[in-house]
Image 1 (spheres, helix red, strand yellow):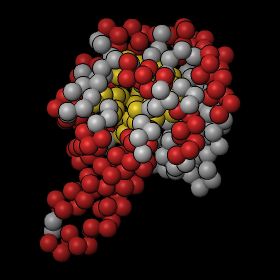
Image 2 (cartoon, helix red, strand yellow):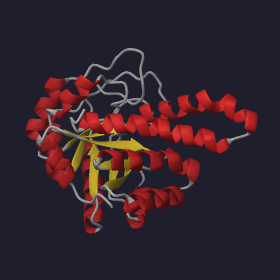
Image 3 (cartoon, helix red, strand yellow):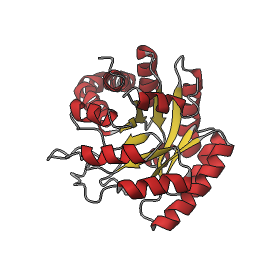
Length: 280
Ligand SMILES: [Zn+2]
């Protein structure tokens, strides 16, 4: 079934747990994530968008993800991650996405507020919720670039931004970076604490791949209720392909490789679901 509304996020924030938002690029990743949700009985969010649309087609990827979510025994949200395109955001809302992220982090504060509020109004009319961002999380969404965090979210500005936009969830920049990096990211938990005290909506942690579990769990104690995970799933997929490739080439068995990749993604997604639910 579709995971609609923000009650699951609010409940998670109140109980120091979080929902993972896993990025999916193709059919096998969508199936692996839904299977992990069903296996654990825990709700999940699938990020389907951006570069995955360029790879597989927007309508194609959206439809297969929404179909899988609707058919799931457990609640599955379908989310558009990091979009700067209103055309893309409104198209995904029309397709039935349960949430969208408008990323106005490159805009001036007033422009970010104005556009985010516009997206919020439209999304709420369509029974969807909105995540936004004030300060960009550095690094690339789709490949690890050894990014280093720079600017961080200011707690007072975050409070003003949430109040002015009516946004449902806020992505924070607290030292987190997209992708794996060779030097571990240093998370500013005091800053997160201050943001959590001032902002009355669930917080979102991007770039959680590569962070030690105890750091992620410390963020869950500070109102982070959605954790984006992408790189870890991509690595699991690619390593499974590498491991099975030469054997599969002997018999030209494509399905064996795709199946192994799906299984590997399922294992990682299951581990993260349980960790974020504190069920390990
Ligand atoms: Zn992100």
